[in-house]
Length: 87
Image 1 (cartoon, one colour):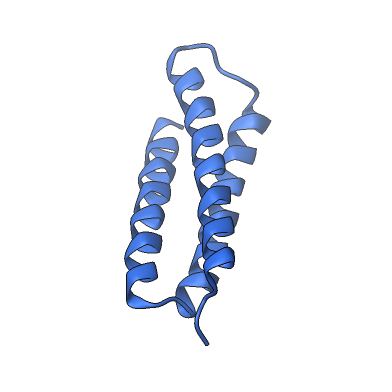
Image 2 (image 1 turned 120 degrees about the horizontal axis):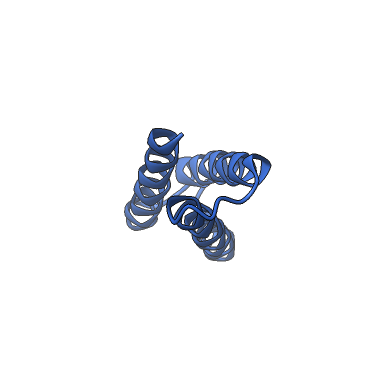
């Protein structure tokens, strides 16, 4: 089964929104204007959830789609690592 284009686009857009929101929480925390611990934890949980969704789409993706999804997964992992190291 191939991932349909709308499914891929929707998942990629959602991932980008979550990455941007989590990056903002991370950047704010680095500026010593920390949000709540809950906000930081929620951002990490959202990254984990979208990573799982991307994994699901990845299983049905074409080779071209896989490349795009893998790049997005790498962005998510990098941000997750930064957030973990900051704690």
